[in-house]
Image 1 (tube, rainbow, N blue to C red):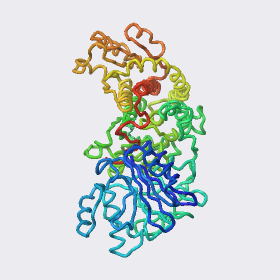
Image 2 (image 1 turned 90 degrees about the vertical axis):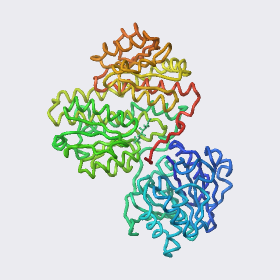
Image 3 (image 1 turned 180 degrees about the vertical axis):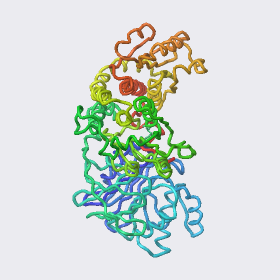
Length: 616
Ligand code: F6R
C-alpha cells in the first residue's frame, strides 16, 4: 500500500527510483511520481496517474530527469481520487519542501484549515500536501532546521506515516520520519537508498537500517544519522539481509503467485527446521531461543489469535489444532474487530498476532492493545524488522522469503507451520502430549514439504478443470472442521485474484439457508480430508448434487468412493488430520490461479488490493 523509494549517490537518480518503484508495484498503487534534484537546483517533480509505465514514458525511463538525488512514490488513494494532482511527491506552497508519504494523517482537515488561516493554499485533496506544508510552516515559523521542523510536525499530526522529504535549502540530503508505516534506509558503497520494503533495493544493497517508530533520519551520500523526537541521535545496527535479489524476481514463472506457490515446500521446510533443536528432526521442537521454553509455555491458561484475512484463517486453524493438541482454550479474533471491542481476557493469555508483512495496521493496533492489557504477545511474522516483529514480546519468524504476489500463498503455509509447532510445544509443555506423541507429530511435519511437492504435481488436471469453469460467476466451497477453514482460504483466493464470487460454508450449515442458491451447474468445491467427518460431508455433497450442483471433490488418496458422487476429484497425500490444510490448500490455490489465468486478469496485483494494508 503506497511505496517510497529514495536515492543519493553518484548515479542518475531517476532510473534507479523508477526501478525501485517497479519492485514495489506488488504493494498496490494507482498513480506514481518522482522528484529529482540536480545539485542545489530546485527539485523537478513529475507525476502520472495509472501504471508506472506512464511515468516512465513521461520521463524517458528517467533519463529526462538529470540529478543524482531524489525520491519516488507509488500512491494507493486514500484522500482524494487517483489523479495526477493527487499523486506524490507534493510540494509546499513556495516549493521549499518536497515530500512523499505513506499512511494517513487523521487530523489533516483541522491542519489544512489551520494552514489556510496562515496563508497556505492547496492544489490537491491529499493529506500529504497538508503534511508537507506543515513542515514548511514550522521551518519558517521557528526558523529551525529540517529535523526540528519534522519533529514539530510529528508531534502535531495524528495518524500513521512514513515520510521522505527534500528541503530546498539543504541540498545533498533527504530526510525521513516514521510512525507505524515501514521505512528502511539502505547503505551501498558511497550511495544511500530509502525504501518502504527491502525488495525495492535488494539488487543494489543488502545492508539496511530499519527505522524505528517516531524516529527521523538525515540521509547523505556518505551515511545516515537517526534522531528521536528530542533531536538526539539514536544509534542503530546495520542489518544484513540474507536473501538475495533473485528471491524477489519471477524467474522462470509467469507470475509471482505461481512462483510462490512452488516455493511452499521450501518455505515450510525452512520455517520448520528453524524451530527444531539444532535443525534436527530427532532433537524435537524447541522454542527456548525465542524465550518460550516449556516451563514458560505451561504458564499460559489460554491463547488468543489475532490477525486479518488469510492470516486470520491461519489463526482459525491454529485454534482447532492447539485446542486439540494442547487442551488449552483458544479464541480467534479479527484484528479489526478486536481493537474496538472490550473482549474479556484472562491475564495469563498468550496473544498470538499473525502477520506476513508485520505492518498490517489493524494487527499492529491489536498487538498494542493486547500489550496495554498486560498480555504476553507472540508475533508470527515473515518480514524481519517489521513493526509487529519489533514490538512483540516473542517472535516466531516464518522463513518464507519475500512474498511479492498480493495474494498470500507461501507465507500462509509457513504461518501454518508456526502454529503447528506452537501447538506441539504447548501440548508437550502442558503434559497433553507425551514425548512420543510430540515426536511422531514432528516427524509428520517433516514429511509435509515432500507431500506439498506431490500435491503440486497434479496441476495440469486442475488447470483443465479451472479453465472449464472460468466463465462461472459463483462458486461454493464446503467442508467441515479444518476442511471448512481450508474452504474459507480457498474461497478468499478465488475472490481476490479471479474476481469470481465465492462463498465458504460449513457443510452442515448449507441446508440452513444457502442451499437455495444451488442450481443446475453451480460449482461446488467440497473439501473432505478429515476421515472422521468424511461420511457427514459426503451426505452434504450428495444434497448439493441432487439439486444440480457440479461437484469438485478434494480429498486424500484412498477415499476413492468419492468418485461415485463427485464430477471431478482431486487427491492430496495423507497426513496427520491436524495438518491436512497444508496439503488441501495447494489445489485450491492452483484452482484460483488458473481461473484467473483463463480470465486474463492481473494475478499478482488484483484490482483494489494492496500487499501490506497499512491503513485501517
Ligand atoms: C489474502 C491476503 C490478505 C492478508 C491480510 C493480512 O491473500 O494476503 O488477506 O493475509 O491482508 O496481511 P498480513 O499477513 O501482512 O498481516
